[in-house]
Each structure stands twice: as C-alpha cells, then as structure tokens.
Length: 275
Image 1 (cartoon, helix red, strand yellow):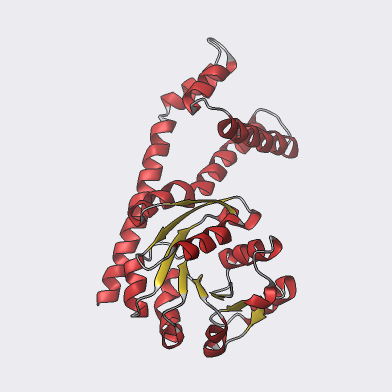
Image 2 (cartoon, helix red, strand yellow):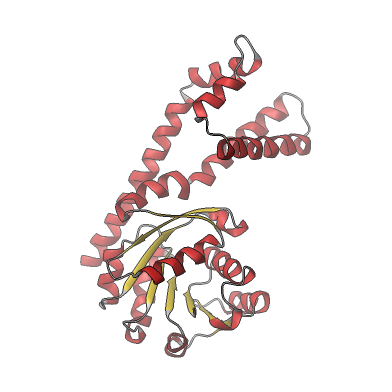
C-alpha cells in the first residue's frame, strides 16, 4: 500500500500516525501535501518520516490510494489539481463531511473506486468510531485495506452511504455532546465544593467505567441505569431533575438536528456544484 494524503490537518495526522505506528505501512510509502502550510508538512516529516511535496504529478505517480483530507470547502480546487494524474487503478478515500460519493465521482470525472469515511476526533488517540461507505467500483481487497487503515485509529463499521448523515449526527459530533455533559459536571462539582482537579479525576473515571460497563455487559443501557437507581436514593433524586428538564428528549433532538444539518450541508454542496 502506497498512500497520498491531500490535506494535512488533524484527521490526516491521526491516520498517518495510526497506520505508521501500527506498522500497516512505512513512512517512506506515505506522501503528504497541503494547500500552503509548509511548516505543517515539515512537522509531519519529522514526526513520521513521510514524504512531503507540492509536486502533485510526482506524488500521485508513486501511490495507489489517495486520501482526500482537506477542508470540505477546498475539495473542488484540490480535486481540480489532482484530476489529471488520477489512474483507474487508484482508490479514493474521503474523510470529508457532507461531500457525497456522487459529488466526488462527478468532480474526478473518472470511474474510480471511492470510499467515504466518517471518523470522529477521537481518532487522534486511536479511539474513533468510524463508518465507511463505498461505491460499486470498490473491490474486496480495497475495502479490507481501508478497513485496516481506519482500524488503526479505532472501531470501523461498514454502512450504507445514506446512513452516514445519521452516523455524523450520532458519533461524528458525539464527542462534543460528551464534552458538553462533562462541562456541566465540572460546574456542578465547583458548586458542591469539590476541587477542580479532584472532580476531573472522578468525572473521567466515571465515564470510563460506564463506557466499559456498556461494552462488556449484555444488558441494555436502561437496565444498567435501573440497577444503579435505588428507590428514594441519591441517583433517583438526580435523575428526577434530569427528567423534569427533559434532558433525554433534548439529547434526542440534538442528534436529530445534527443529522439534519449533515444532510443539509451535503445538499448545499451538491447544489453548488451544479451552479
């Protein structure tokens, strides 16, 4: 596997780190470029031993996988710069939120294998929940190769492309919902008299423990909650406040809104291409 990253932001670096540190590929088989941030390219070269260049023709002559990792707004310009050097044997991997496979197919104007991926920011620590969707040109070997790439940064699941908006709303944006919850827990800790650093340790370990229980137990989340909630106890008192403020319903609406926004952004991008 020889891969080029077009774009060198945090998600590109997470993938580069994952595939190299887990020895899926060596640094000399990875090429990285970006729009203009040469300092970032030098950092990646020093950290991972990758090849860096702004010579697109030369970069693409070496690789069989091209990962689109720029900002979605820059994808049109980026594909325009690489389109003449794409070959039919190449695999395109996109981590661009809101840019459909059909849109990429239209921009590359070549019948290529395309995988669209939706990881989340936890990829930077190897704990992403990534969804992959493919077009009809992707063969089994190519799919297994891409799965291997994203498994170096976390859990990977194959889905239909129409489900990617839901994945975006749930797990793509999901870390922010958890951080928002933690903010509330931190504020409450201060108000009830706990020192900030002490509270942070308790909050983090509580989240880790709950996540491990969900992963290891065969019980549904609702059952696990009930088992922690004794009648007339402290947990019940807290949950009654959450129920009174319709927190669960708010989270449902939150994820629905994020899913709808993902779909809307994809439609806007597709419509702008037609203008």
